[in-house]
Image 1 (cartoon, helix red, strand yellow):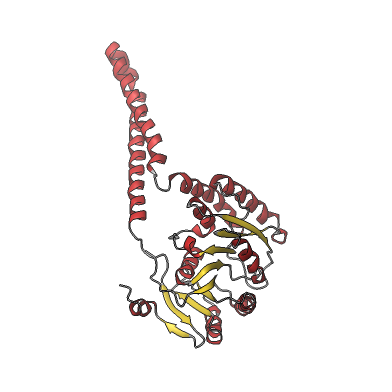
Image 2: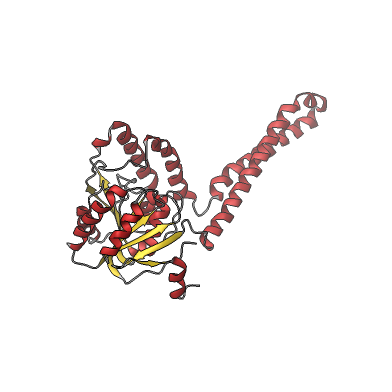
Length: 343
Protein backbone atom coordinates (compact mmCIF):
# COMPACT_ATOMS: atom_id res chain seq x y z
CA UNK A 1 0.00 0.00 0.00
CA UNK A 2 1.07 3.59 -0.42
CA UNK A 3 1.76 6.12 2.31
CA UNK A 4 -1.62 7.48 3.34
CA UNK A 5 -2.24 10.96 2.03
CA UNK A 6 -5.06 13.47 2.14
CA UNK A 7 -4.80 16.19 -0.54
CA UNK A 8 -5.15 19.79 0.51
CA UNK A 9 -7.58 22.20 -1.18
CA UNK A 10 -8.13 21.23 -4.82
CA UNK A 11 -6.29 23.29 -7.40
CA UNK A 12 -5.79 23.23 -11.14
CA UNK A 13 -2.09 22.36 -11.26
CA UNK A 14 0.35 20.49 -9.05
CA UNK A 15 4.05 20.53 -9.86
CA UNK A 16 5.99 17.68 -8.23
CA UNK A 17 9.75 18.09 -7.89
CA UNK A 18 11.86 15.37 -6.22
CA UNK A 19 15.15 16.72 -4.86
CA UNK A 20 18.22 15.06 -3.40
CA UNK A 21 21.21 17.21 -2.43
CA UNK A 22 20.23 20.10 -4.69
CA UNK A 23 20.85 22.99 -2.28
CA UNK A 24 22.27 25.25 -4.98
CA UNK A 25 19.23 24.76 -7.22
CA UNK A 26 16.46 25.26 -4.64
CA UNK A 27 15.99 29.04 -4.80
CA UNK A 28 16.62 29.50 -8.58
CA UNK A 29 14.21 26.67 -9.42
CA UNK A 30 11.52 27.95 -7.05
CA UNK A 31 11.74 31.48 -8.46
CA UNK A 32 11.40 30.24 -12.03
CA UNK A 33 8.58 27.86 -11.15
CA UNK A 34 6.63 30.55 -9.31
CA UNK A 35 6.99 32.91 -12.26
CA UNK A 36 5.94 30.27 -14.79
CA UNK A 37 2.90 29.14 -12.79
CA UNK A 38 1.79 32.68 -11.89
CA UNK A 39 1.68 33.46 -15.61
CA UNK A 40 -0.95 30.74 -16.11
CA UNK A 41 -3.37 32.64 -13.85
CA UNK A 42 -4.78 29.41 -12.40
CA UNK A 43 -4.60 27.90 -8.92
CA UNK A 44 -1.52 25.78 -8.36
CA UNK A 45 0.80 24.23 -5.81
CA UNK A 46 4.49 23.37 -5.89
CA UNK A 47 5.33 20.12 -4.09
CA UNK A 48 9.02 19.68 -3.36
CA UNK A 49 9.94 16.20 -2.12
CA UNK A 50 13.18 16.12 -0.15
CA UNK A 51 14.46 12.59 -0.76
CA UNK A 52 16.70 12.29 2.27
CA UNK A 53 19.12 15.09 1.38
CA UNK A 54 22.27 15.38 3.50
CA UNK A 55 23.01 19.01 2.58
CA UNK A 56 20.93 22.14 3.24
CA UNK A 57 18.23 21.30 0.67
CA UNK A 58 15.49 20.82 3.27
CA UNK A 59 16.49 23.94 5.22
CA UNK A 60 16.22 26.06 2.09
CA UNK A 61 12.93 24.47 1.10
CA UNK A 62 11.60 25.16 4.61
CA UNK A 63 12.44 28.82 4.22
CA UNK A 64 10.58 28.97 0.91
CA UNK A 65 7.52 27.30 2.45
CA UNK A 66 7.37 30.09 5.03
CA UNK A 67 7.35 32.73 2.30
CA UNK A 68 5.02 31.22 -0.30
CA UNK A 69 1.65 29.63 0.42
CA UNK A 70 1.85 27.75 -2.90
CA UNK A 71 4.89 25.74 -1.77
CA UNK A 72 4.61 22.49 0.14
CA UNK A 73 7.55 20.36 1.22
CA UNK A 74 7.36 16.61 1.79
CA UNK A 75 10.41 15.35 3.67
CA UNK A 76 11.12 11.63 3.42
CA UNK A 77 12.79 9.80 6.28
CA UNK A 78 15.74 8.73 4.13
CA UNK A 79 16.89 8.55 0.51
CA UNK A 80 14.41 6.17 -1.13
CA UNK A 81 15.15 6.98 -4.77
CA UNK A 82 13.48 8.91 -7.55
CA UNK A 83 10.48 6.65 -8.12
CA UNK A 84 9.39 6.63 -4.44
CA UNK A 85 10.00 10.39 -4.21
CA UNK A 86 7.78 10.99 -7.24
CA UNK A 87 5.17 8.62 -5.83
CA UNK A 88 5.14 10.61 -2.59
CA UNK A 89 4.63 13.85 -4.50
CA UNK A 90 1.85 12.32 -6.60
CA UNK A 91 0.11 11.00 -3.49
CA UNK A 92 0.07 14.43 -1.86
CA UNK A 93 -0.83 16.35 -5.02
CA UNK A 94 -4.25 18.01 -5.18
CA UNK A 95 -4.18 19.31 -8.76
CA UNK A 96 -6.36 18.19 -11.64
CA UNK A 97 -3.25 18.35 -13.82
CA UNK A 98 -0.01 17.02 -12.34
CA UNK A 99 3.37 18.02 -13.71
CA UNK A 100 6.68 16.45 -12.76
CA UNK A 101 10.22 17.64 -13.29
CA UNK A 102 13.68 17.12 -11.82
CA UNK A 103 15.20 19.57 -9.38
CA UNK A 104 18.45 20.10 -11.27
CA UNK A 105 17.20 22.98 -13.47
CA UNK A 106 18.06 21.11 -16.65
CA UNK A 107 14.40 21.41 -17.64
CA UNK A 108 13.08 24.95 -18.05
CA UNK A 109 9.93 25.76 -16.03
CA UNK A 110 9.07 28.36 -18.70
CA UNK A 111 8.25 25.45 -21.02
CA UNK A 112 5.46 24.12 -18.79
CA UNK A 113 2.83 25.90 -20.97
CA UNK A 114 4.13 23.90 -23.96
CA UNK A 115 3.23 20.63 -22.21
CA UNK A 116 -0.10 21.99 -21.01
CA UNK A 117 -1.02 23.25 -24.47
CA UNK A 118 -0.48 19.78 -25.90
CA UNK A 119 -2.44 18.23 -23.04
CA UNK A 120 -5.40 20.46 -23.88
CA UNK A 121 -5.57 18.87 -27.34
CA UNK A 122 -7.13 15.82 -25.71
CA UNK A 123 -4.12 13.84 -24.52
CA UNK A 124 -3.76 12.23 -21.09
CA UNK A 125 0.04 12.27 -20.80
CA UNK A 126 2.50 14.63 -22.48
CA UNK A 127 6.15 13.63 -22.46
CA UNK A 128 8.99 16.13 -22.75
CA UNK A 129 11.50 15.16 -25.45
CA UNK A 130 15.03 16.39 -24.80
CA UNK A 131 15.86 16.49 -28.49
CA UNK A 132 19.14 18.41 -28.22
CA UNK A 133 21.49 16.79 -25.69
CA UNK A 134 24.80 17.22 -27.49
CA UNK A 135 26.30 18.98 -24.46
CA UNK A 136 26.29 15.62 -22.64
CA UNK A 137 28.71 14.03 -25.08
CA UNK A 138 28.53 11.00 -27.36
CA UNK A 139 29.15 8.40 -24.62
CA UNK A 140 25.96 9.46 -22.83
CA UNK A 141 23.67 10.35 -25.73
CA UNK A 142 24.32 7.38 -28.02
CA UNK A 143 23.38 4.63 -25.50
CA UNK A 144 20.35 6.72 -24.57
CA UNK A 145 19.19 6.96 -28.19
CA UNK A 146 19.63 3.22 -28.71
CA UNK A 147 17.77 2.39 -25.49
CA UNK A 148 14.92 4.78 -26.29
CA UNK A 149 14.52 3.28 -29.75
CA UNK A 150 14.31 -0.26 -28.43
CA UNK A 151 12.03 0.71 -25.54
CA UNK A 152 9.65 2.34 -28.03
CA UNK A 153 9.72 -0.75 -30.24
CA UNK A 154 9.18 -3.25 -27.43
CA UNK A 155 6.53 -1.19 -25.62
CA UNK A 156 4.60 -0.09 -28.68
CA UNK A 157 4.63 3.51 -27.38
CA UNK A 158 6.37 5.71 -30.00
CA UNK A 159 8.10 8.31 -27.84
CA UNK A 160 11.72 9.38 -28.12
CA UNK A 161 12.70 10.06 -24.51
CA UNK A 162 11.80 7.60 -21.78
CA UNK A 163 14.36 8.97 -19.34
CA UNK A 164 13.00 12.46 -18.76
CA UNK A 165 10.97 13.32 -15.67
CA UNK A 166 9.50 16.42 -17.36
CA UNK A 167 5.92 15.32 -18.05
CA UNK A 168 2.30 16.42 -17.63
CA UNK A 169 -0.43 14.01 -16.52
CA UNK A 170 -4.14 14.17 -16.02
CA UNK A 171 -4.95 13.27 -12.44
CA UNK A 172 -6.98 10.17 -13.30
CA UNK A 173 -3.96 8.65 -15.02
CA UNK A 174 -1.70 9.02 -11.97
CA UNK A 175 -4.30 7.72 -9.52
CA UNK A 176 -4.32 4.34 -11.24
CA UNK A 177 -0.69 3.43 -10.51
CA UNK A 178 1.28 2.01 -7.61
CA UNK A 179 4.89 2.70 -8.46
CA UNK A 180 7.90 0.69 -7.33
CA UNK A 181 11.47 0.04 -8.45
CA UNK A 182 12.34 2.52 -11.21
CA UNK A 183 8.95 2.57 -12.87
CA UNK A 184 8.78 6.36 -13.18
CA UNK A 185 10.52 5.99 -16.55
CA UNK A 186 7.75 3.69 -17.78
CA UNK A 187 4.77 5.77 -16.72
CA UNK A 188 3.81 6.72 -20.31
CA UNK A 189 4.05 3.05 -21.26
CA UNK A 190 1.92 1.84 -18.35
CA UNK A 191 -0.59 4.61 -19.05
CA UNK A 192 -0.77 3.76 -22.77
CA UNK A 193 -1.42 0.10 -21.98
CA UNK A 194 -4.44 1.23 -19.96
CA UNK A 195 -5.81 3.25 -22.85
CA UNK A 196 -4.33 6.69 -22.12
CA UNK A 197 -3.50 8.94 -25.06
CA UNK A 198 0.19 9.84 -25.13
CA UNK A 199 1.88 12.77 -26.88
CA UNK A 200 5.41 14.15 -26.92
CA UNK A 201 6.74 17.68 -27.39
CA UNK A 202 10.35 18.87 -27.78
CA UNK A 203 11.78 20.66 -24.75
CA UNK A 204 15.16 22.17 -24.03
CA UNK A 205 17.85 20.47 -21.94
CA UNK A 206 20.49 22.62 -20.25
CA UNK A 207 23.74 21.57 -18.58
CA UNK A 208 23.76 21.51 -14.80
CA UNK A 209 24.86 24.79 -13.27
CA UNK A 210 25.17 23.36 -9.76
CA UNK A 211 25.81 19.94 -8.28
CA UNK A 212 26.51 16.61 -9.96
CA UNK A 213 24.24 14.20 -11.78
CA UNK A 214 22.93 11.21 -9.85
CA UNK A 215 23.13 9.12 -13.04
CA UNK A 216 26.64 8.39 -14.30
CA UNK A 217 27.92 6.51 -17.32
CA UNK A 218 27.19 3.25 -15.50
CA UNK A 219 23.52 3.91 -16.15
CA UNK A 220 23.92 2.46 -19.66
CA UNK A 221 24.54 -0.98 -18.14
CA UNK A 222 20.96 -0.86 -16.88
CA UNK A 223 19.63 -0.62 -20.43
CA UNK A 224 19.38 -4.41 -21.03
CA UNK A 225 17.42 -4.75 -17.79
CA UNK A 226 15.10 -1.91 -18.84
CA UNK A 227 14.45 -3.71 -22.12
CA UNK A 228 13.72 -7.00 -20.36
CA UNK A 229 11.48 -5.21 -17.87
CA UNK A 230 9.41 -3.49 -20.52
CA UNK A 231 9.09 -6.74 -22.50
CA UNK A 232 7.93 -8.62 -19.42
CA UNK A 233 5.53 -5.88 -18.31
CA UNK A 234 3.93 -5.72 -21.73
CA UNK A 235 3.34 -9.43 -22.28
CA UNK A 236 3.50 -11.23 -18.94
CA UNK A 237 2.76 -8.75 -16.13
CA UNK A 238 -0.65 -10.23 -15.35
CA UNK A 239 0.04 -13.81 -16.49
CA UNK A 240 3.65 -14.82 -15.70
CA UNK A 241 2.76 -18.52 -16.08
CA UNK A 242 2.68 -17.95 -19.86
CA UNK A 243 6.36 -16.97 -19.72
CA UNK A 244 7.60 -19.86 -17.60
CA UNK A 245 4.89 -22.41 -18.33
CA UNK A 246 5.59 -23.05 -22.03
CA UNK A 247 9.33 -23.80 -21.70
CA UNK A 248 8.58 -25.71 -18.50
CA UNK A 249 6.01 -27.87 -20.24
CA UNK A 250 8.33 -28.48 -23.20
CA UNK A 251 11.14 -29.46 -20.84
CA UNK A 252 8.85 -31.88 -19.02
CA UNK A 253 7.71 -33.46 -22.28
CA UNK A 254 11.31 -33.78 -23.48
CA UNK A 255 12.27 -35.50 -20.22
CA UNK A 256 9.36 -37.91 -20.56
CA UNK A 257 10.33 -38.67 -24.17
CA UNK A 258 13.93 -39.37 -23.16
CA UNK A 259 12.82 -41.87 -20.51
CA UNK A 260 10.25 -43.38 -22.88
CA UNK A 261 13.02 -43.91 -25.44
CA UNK A 262 15.23 -45.51 -22.82
CA UNK A 263 12.39 -47.78 -21.72
CA UNK A 264 11.68 -48.81 -25.32
CA UNK A 265 15.35 -49.54 -25.99
CA UNK A 266 15.55 -51.59 -22.79
CA UNK A 267 12.65 -53.78 -23.96
CA UNK A 268 14.43 -54.62 -27.21
CA UNK A 269 17.97 -55.01 -25.87
CA UNK A 270 18.16 -55.10 -22.11
CA UNK A 271 21.90 -55.70 -21.75
CA UNK A 272 23.00 -53.21 -24.41
CA UNK A 273 20.91 -50.32 -23.07
CA UNK A 274 22.21 -50.78 -19.52
CA UNK A 275 25.71 -50.17 -20.82
CA UNK A 276 24.76 -46.91 -22.60
CA UNK A 277 21.91 -45.51 -20.48
CA UNK A 278 23.86 -43.32 -18.04
CA UNK A 279 23.92 -40.20 -20.24
CA UNK A 280 20.24 -40.56 -21.18
CA UNK A 281 19.18 -40.94 -17.55
CA UNK A 282 21.07 -37.79 -16.55
CA UNK A 283 19.66 -35.81 -19.49
CA UNK A 284 16.11 -36.96 -18.74
CA UNK A 285 16.50 -36.05 -15.07
CA UNK A 286 17.81 -32.57 -15.94
CA UNK A 287 14.91 -31.97 -18.33
CA UNK A 288 12.30 -33.15 -15.84
CA UNK A 289 13.72 -31.15 -12.95
CA UNK A 290 14.08 -28.04 -15.12
CA UNK A 291 10.50 -28.40 -16.31
CA UNK A 292 9.19 -28.74 -12.78
CA UNK A 293 11.21 -25.71 -11.64
CA UNK A 294 9.99 -23.55 -14.52
CA UNK A 295 6.37 -24.54 -13.94
CA UNK A 296 6.79 -23.84 -10.23
CA UNK A 297 8.26 -20.40 -11.00
CA UNK A 298 5.30 -19.65 -13.24
CA UNK A 299 2.80 -20.69 -10.56
CA UNK A 300 4.63 -18.63 -7.94
CA UNK A 301 4.57 -15.71 -10.34
CA UNK A 302 0.81 -16.13 -10.71
CA UNK A 303 0.42 -16.06 -6.92
CA UNK A 304 2.58 -12.93 -6.68
CA UNK A 305 0.58 -11.26 -9.44
CA UNK A 306 -2.64 -12.13 -7.61
CA UNK A 307 -1.21 -10.67 -4.42
CA UNK A 308 0.00 -7.55 -6.25
CA UNK A 309 -3.28 -6.78 -7.97
CA UNK A 310 -5.61 -8.01 -5.25
CA UNK A 311 -4.05 -6.64 -2.09
CA UNK A 312 -2.20 -3.51 -1.09
CA UNK A 313 1.54 -3.67 -0.55
CA UNK A 314 3.98 -2.11 1.85
CA UNK A 315 4.62 1.59 1.18
CA UNK A 316 7.68 2.36 -0.92
CA UNK A 317 8.44 5.53 1.04
CA UNK A 318 8.02 6.95 4.55
CA UNK A 319 7.24 10.59 5.25
CA UNK A 320 8.95 12.31 8.15
CA UNK A 321 7.13 15.66 7.98
CA UNK A 322 5.27 18.00 5.67
CA UNK A 323 5.60 21.77 5.53
CA UNK A 324 2.60 23.57 4.13
CA UNK A 325 1.27 27.13 3.91
CA UNK A 326 2.84 30.56 4.15
CA UNK A 327 3.54 30.01 7.85
CA UNK A 328 5.50 26.84 7.15
CA UNK A 329 3.11 24.72 9.21
CA UNK A 330 4.51 21.31 10.10
CA UNK A 331 2.03 18.51 9.48
CA UNK A 332 2.95 15.07 10.72
CA UNK A 333 1.62 12.34 8.39
CA UNK A 334 0.00 10.32 11.17
CA UNK A 335 -1.82 13.34 12.63
CA UNK A 336 -2.89 14.45 9.22
CA UNK A 337 -4.43 11.09 8.37
CA UNK A 338 -6.12 10.82 11.75
CA UNK A 339 -7.66 14.26 11.52
CA UNK A 340 -9.12 13.34 8.15
CA UNK A 341 -10.63 10.15 9.51
CA UNK A 342 -8.29 7.75 7.71
CA UNK A 343 -7.94 4.48 9.62
